[in-house]
Image 1 (cartoon, rainbow, N blue to C red):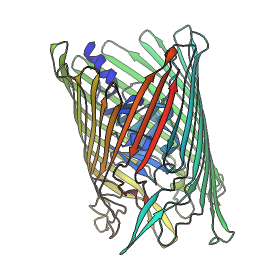
Image 2 (image 1 turned 30 degrees about the vertical axis):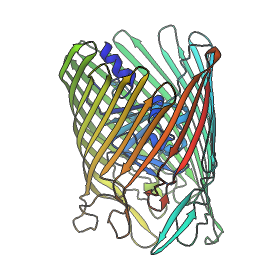
Image 3 (image 1 turned 60 degrees about the horizontal axis):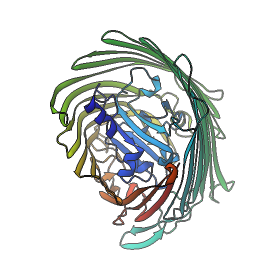
Image 4 (image 1 turned 90 degrees about the horizontal axis):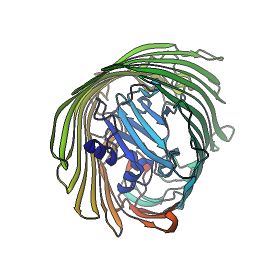
Length: 640
């Protein structure tokens, strides 16, 4: 019990990681502070196997892809329920801020829980955990402010309170504004000029309410209300001779969700319901258009419900879950002003647990029905996908209470698919209603070692995974002429890769801790679509072969210090590897200092200062979207 407790306290692996064949990584808010993480993009770069696309730093669009399968195959969930976007099929993570998150969990191929919503069982699940409402006091809270370079200001407030012994309420809010007018160097042939990112102002605010309750029968209830509003100027790609921007994007998103869990002896039941709404208003004021402006407006609504039941036997557990989703999309576009989709997803799961062996098998059934009041609707889709994983306890040792270790191995196989998005199906001069779903097959094997080698070496955790992924019927857009593109099923991609993580805690002296976090990914992907095409056998766009993240924190009685590194190998911005589209490798360093000061009456003051991109490295994650150079951030938070 002591050894398992140590593993959970460090938080480096999810609780289910040592019990089944799921490569799972977890970052808590405390670990983000130790790693020098200042925003959601920095947190995502600390998770191995993820590729981040960042369109220009703070306020820029941020999406992730797990193990090269694409952003549409990575499910993003908030407090257990998936965030849907049927229009684009990917979630913009820039709307979420680490200030009001308690942590992130990444599970690849499967999830640790046998009973869960079916929508969470994608090729990968990135789950964000909001600040929990488990306060033991009648009223507690936290207020803070962060100030940074380029006009960044971000105040936040969080309040928690117990209404009764069974009901807890929480309220949090966060505001962010920034000019984002950072300098960069523009290379135009032999001419080098110093420019400033223009037309990049943004401001956003988020309000969230939580309710947690337990009833007399032992059931748990959780309700969440979430609203986000942001308005931003879009600088677009860097162009030669002009940096004047004309684009504006205003968005608002809201959702409400309610979850319940209940246990009866060997039975467990869960259900949840969710409604979400999003509005996207895009304007490009430019005389090149006949009316003087291009306006693209979208309104999306989603109704979602899930329920399931699980039964424990002596060595077996069995679970069944079903999800229903209705999504509608309205727009001011001529093509398909209203699109609708009904989806039914079902999962039957079995798990066998015996001393040194755990085996899990799932069968997922997907049914999608499409309708469109104007024009031709997309084809309906039906598919069945299997998943299987096995983990084995290879060896464990216990010299004494302070020296222990365990080694486990795992193997897995999973099929997952995604239906075409509304944009891929209906978008003007791009969409095709006859697209087939995209199918991804994942196979992998891995080892995890957890140990406490010595009293001064309090924790060691090493995880290594090798995998092979194959994507069939990849959805791609190809040009027919300069103005008309068409979306088709033409892609086949093979992806080989390895993910390695290492976390360690050292205690060189009393009241001193060294915390080391590292993650490394190697990924070799090849396009196997058409031997006559220019992209055949080449690494797909924006997919680096090598990704490295590392951080070292020194916690001491005076001022805690941290240093961090993020590095990517060179990438191509085109599938054909055209001349001039190679993005060079880069390494970004950051340093930080943080300290907690205890005040009277249990009040705590947390202070932090960071310098990011310490060596002022200019780089791009997405071509012609330069990232900020050296910049700083300071913050203060008071908790009571």
